[in-house]
Each structure stands twice: as C-alpha cells, then as structure tokens.
Length: 95
Image 1 (cartoon, rainbow, N blue to C red):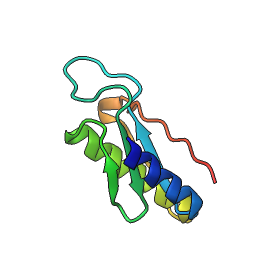
Image 2: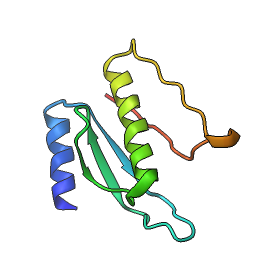
Image 3: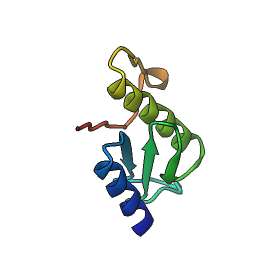
Image 4: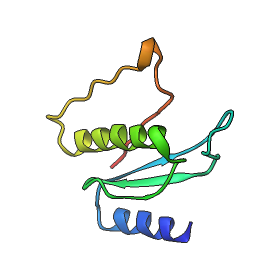
C-alpha cells in the first residue's frame, strides 16, 4: 500500500498521466476484494492488482485506452459490453 501511494504521489508531482482502478464491490467467488487497487501508467506498466485473470486484463486494456485518449484527444474509444451488458467500469479523469 505504501509503495502504491508513493508511486501515485510521484506521478502527480511529476505531472505524469496515470490512472487508478479500485475494486469497490465484489460478488461471488471473485478473487478481487474491495480496496484492491491498480495504478496504470501511460506506457502500459502497472503496479498493484484488481484480482487478476480476464477481468483485470480487460480493466487494464480499457483503462489504458482511456488514459491514452486523454493524453491524445485525437484517439477515440468505442466499447460495448458482451451480449448487450454494459461493463461495470467507471472512469474518472482529472488534470
């Protein structure tokens, strides 16, 4: 947790674009637990986890796409949930 906080503060102080994903709720047999965090850098590297597996890979991909779109507004993002379902992922951005 301390390493995560230090990395986040360093990115903010150095004005480096980063995104943070955090588990706020988990149902069933998910390995994810509320409070799990993932810090994603614009180069695709990350620190932490949000439970691993396919869901984490999707969160990393979607979050990186969003982060890159914020850094380069000419980039566009179109995502659809499987079988009409909308993924329960929210993005909050700030500068």
